[in-house]
Image (cartoon, rainbow, N blue to C red; front, top):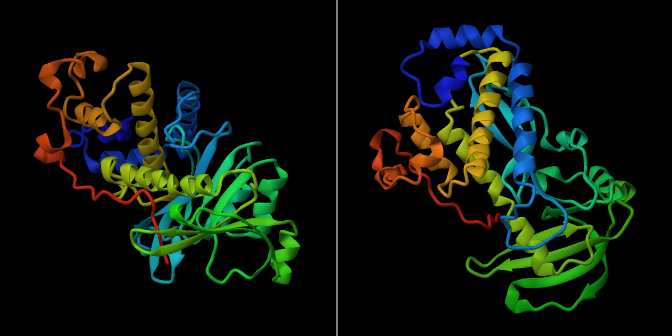
Length: 334
C-alpha cells in the first residue's frame, strides 16, 4: 500500500527505508494477482474499443520487452551482461485498447523469444513482432494455433520466391511475394509458405521487409499493422517516465517485482477510471491531477468537467513537467 501511495504522488510523506522494508517482506505475487485482476476488468471495459486505423475482426497484439538497467553489484540476481545488470519487462499489449494482457518480469539475460512459450495464442488474432522474435518453430506454432503474425525480417533472410502479386508502388509497397525458406534448419522449423512484403518508407528512403502467414490481407494493411506496433514503445515510455520505475526502493528480486507490478496496476487503474467515468482527458492528465491532489474530496469525473480545473495540463505544472520527444509512429531501422 505504501508503494501504491508513492506512485500516486505521495512521495515526501513516506520514508524510503520504510518502503524498502515493506517491499522486502511482502510477497510480490500479491501485487501481481491484484494487477491481473485489474487487467481482466479493463479488458472487459475496453472490449469493444478499436484505436487502430485498420478494421480487423480479431484482436491485434504487439509483443515486446523493455529493459531497465540496474547495477549488477547491487542487484546481483539481475544478470544481463558481464559487468551490467538489468531486468526485462516482457509485455503483450492489445493494440486496439492499449491494455496489457500479459506481463512477465525476468532478468535481462532472458532472450525475448523465450516469452512466446508463455503466451496463450488466441485463434484469429494478430501478433505483431520485431526481429528479436524471429524463431521459425515458434512462429509456426502461432500459425498452427489459427492465429496470424506480422514480423520484420532480418536482412540476411535466405528464401526462394514462389510467386508474386501486383503492387501499387505509389503506396510504398515494392514487392509482395510468396516464398519458402531455403536454410535447412529454418525450412525444417517452418516448412510452409510465407508471405514477404517489402516496403519503402518514402520520406526517409528506407526499406522494411515483413513476413506474415496471412495471404488475404492487403499488403498495405500488413504495413499498417506493423506501424501500430509503436504503441507498445509508447506504453513502456509511459510506465518508465510517469510511474518512476527506474529508481527502486529495494534491491531484492521480490522488491523490484513489487514496484513494477504497482506501476502497472496504477496504469490500469487510471485506464479503468477513464472508461468508467467517461473522461475525455488523456491518461497522463488524469494521473497528473491525482498526483498533485491525492486527498481532495472531489469526484474524479467532476474534476475534468469543472472549467476551473481545465488547466491541469502537463506544461502548467513545472514540478511534474516531463519532456517527451514525439517518436515517429512508424519506426524504421535499416
